[in-house]
Length: 265
Image (cartoon, rainbow, N blue to C red; front, side, top):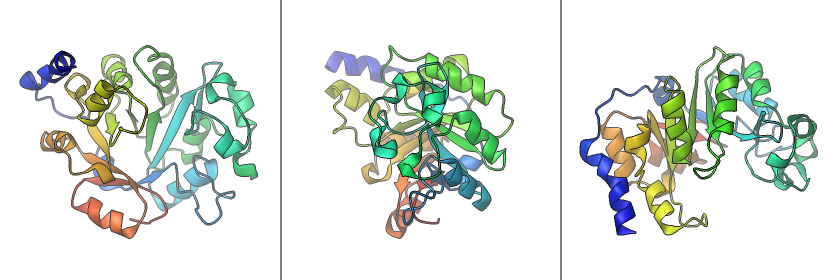
């Protein structure tokens, strides 16, 4: 493991001082996690629903959303890999077509699973979109990233991409350098990953190759030297997920912006 970690850390020695590409809204405008969804009446305004994104846009908050690749190569907005928690159906998101997924209702309410195009059409450039790509590992990187780029290229509104998978953001760095990109991390020790991957993700060891424009880090895992180092290099530090006033107060002393839910910054 020591040799592998040494290889990962070597780029820090000659880290290029490239000017970051982070837009101003990533620092200045608190971001609604999966839209401005409602804890008291979740069926009326579920997470990652058009109603939640509409509420965030109406309040002036950028929206954070999660995307998966469908069986027919389209992009759907949904957090989990499986359907059960939000739709009551069995199966994986990737096993269904976009038409099959958008026909499903969220929490048995009136809101349906939306596509990325439907979300962008709904917010209509009123607020930026922060798109989290749900891809895993290096071997599967490419199809989701390409599909997301195709969709984003058709919409003039402000947007940025991010992922816990550093290989996904490395693909973006190489193939879509114009898109602001961020690396997500935090406490990864309960995610079932090999130890070397946990260390690499938690310590942002692939960041010198990705050259992220911003960092998104778990609030509970801060302070941490790695996001602090990138913040000193001029990259905004966003924290997730802020859910109450105490967390909001702590975040103000540690980061540049928050990804929040169920609390109003």
